[in-house]
Length: 345
Ligand code: SAM
Ligand code: FES
Image (tube, rainbow, N blue to C red):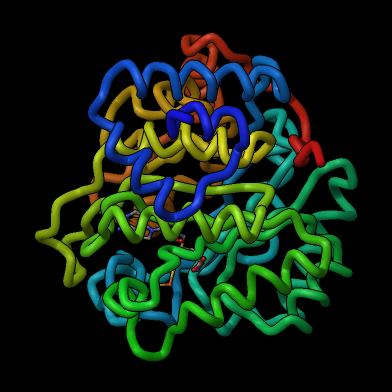
């Protein structure tokens, strides 16, 4: 059976088959077929709905030193900030008024935000917004900590695996970080009943086709409810400052493939995609994505959460971001809905 047909019919590919599929990436007819089928299956499960997540970047302090990341510990050239509990709750209140039913609390691995402090914030958000889902994205923690946050009311967790290949992981991260622990965290989060998001950067330095095939195999094993992929974009204060950015076109192709491998997955059209291409997010939706994540953080802090250069939407109020995205979603033929946007199981 032709490999693209196998993908469409069985929703599964081995590493070798992924590599075979990649060899079709510059065959326009094959890619057209994959994209069409991805959109078909996305419509089957989610119609024309696009879910929205209000992103609250609540701290840019980080104890880690990921080599690609603009807010890494050793970057002395950025001003660090932490939102207060009140500021976070204000972002949520504003978000609920704007129609958000999911809040994503994302930050560096900031030890000031202890297990108890985060649990407290989660409880307060849940109390004020019982109909909203809470997603945490604060890195690698113990199973006990994840459990405490689950009990406090957290529903989902985003932790990109970054790359499923040990050697490549080591190229992107310092010795203090291990792929095995990242994977362990993802499986523990799943066990605890979180809706889990993994993912990787497309075109990160040193990435090969083999690595991408291993990413797709790992995602099929993990079966996450969400997958975040976006192009790597260099940040001027990192060791990868002069590396090439990832490709928008390749990201779009991988979005379609992911939609077919994990048909019901929640798949964002990421800010990084919109940063490299003014129509990147619309193209992401047309390739099979079904989620957008506008920023709810206070405008005065947005520029300080610069993971990569020229990040978009750092100057606009939340309401403006939401309206802008709403129009973009419509122009791609979809509709932004007021909904928690849970995984459909
Ligand atoms: N600390 C949390 C963690 O490690 O999961 C969440 C914050 S971290 C900044 C969120 C994601 O940003 C990372 O998983 C990474 O894939 C992405 N990211 C960081 N630097 C990037 C870059 N230069 N280009 C594109 N994406 C980047
Ligand atoms: Fe910690 Fe990027 S190095 S968030």
